[in-house]
Length: 259
Image (cartoon, rainbow, N blue to C red; front, side, top):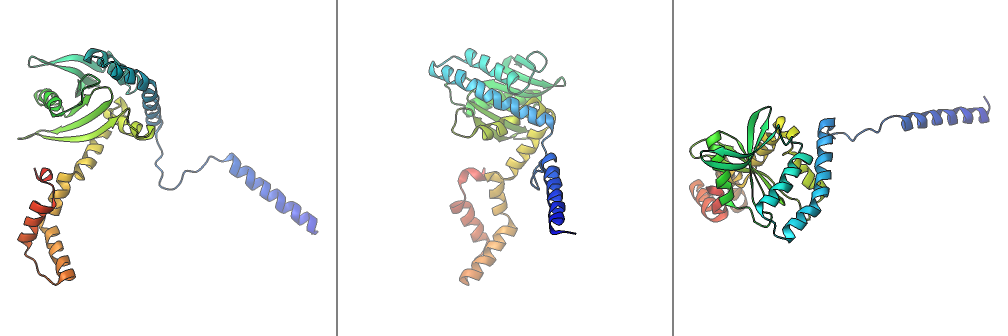
């Protein structure tokens, strides 16, 4: 075979390989999770709503709008951004023992969360949480959401004596955080994510690595004994396990993590 013919064959083979690569779908890097269409659609909807309502929200804050006006924006955001149907999924002024929760969220006719709304210029605080917590305790609802339009907080309540309240997520729509970060957080409040209990997984992950959980691990017998051994290795001093535990508890860890 002549040299020119050989080069022609190689060239044809390279062309076919190029065509095959160009026509094949792009491969995702190993370890990348394939996002189902429903999730991609929900995230796109949340992203668009954040862009759409940032300006009206800023205007509400600038004129110190009242709670009623704030509620109008939150209703629109719940529907256009988080995917709830205004008539099937949301109930306003939900009565609980003579008090009224601003919103109840229903999915498949089951009450899954309460939302407490405060005016856009009011900072969310423990008093507001206690208010919506009362509704949740009386109705046996696990999830509570606080919002002033700008800040959204979601809390999980574990029944017991006393009840345990954990902050699962918090997002500020007007913060300097990227649109992607805000979208990732608010996605867990969408109807699609709530229906699939994805927010439960988020709460468990956050609870497992909370300061209180980590403090309990650090004060466990296994860890304090490991600290004793490492101290002996480094200093040749065989410290008492009880003394190590006392110092960790009283001098190293922050008091609020031990409650």
